[in-house]
Image (tube, rainbow, N blue to C red; front, top):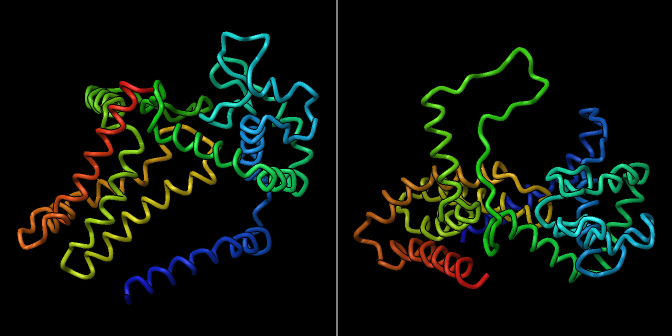
Length: 295
């Protein structure tokens, strides 16, 4: 019970950082407010509009926005409108050259802050079902879980186009690493949901670690990886593979510990030794069957 109590207290204390940094950033650290929450608000308003069929921008973009948000009449070959659960980018520019709606972000800039926040909160309160459908669709798309053709291969070798002094030339070692990274990301073990699944399973498995300190550190590590990704259900706006890196790292660090301290322990009951591994295998099998034969 002591461990559970400390975990709950630590979680509650961590929540204090939310109002704490909101006060410290402008008044103590003197950080300029660039309204970083605005892309999330724009994305959510577009998603709620899509799933509710009602314009959450209150006619700001004209009477045809609901239809445009769902489907481009002049570009039917694009297969969509402004909204896609993949990312918010289509409201800021045209990232995939299928016809974005950059005017949404640009024209809303004067409303950034309290006015856009009120619009956002009102939309969530008025259309909670549409909001949850939008957030679920985005997280599912990011995790590449129950979706077909939603692979996002690892991107390597990218650098800013304004870097003039610093660059690199690929060598054979780099090429091997790139090949392994890209092909692993496209394998059944590469989608981001795998690492969230491993962290969740290892939270269960860590209970079988005998040493108290090792058990607590391992549990904290994989809990951190789990919470990091689950937070994207509320704040996620992008699709890039890099946003799973911390969860991936937590899972990889914990793997040798779980195998050495849990799976290899013959004095531990079988359900704790092999149950987490069976859970991982079952979910992967379920996902592969669903994607290959039913979606």
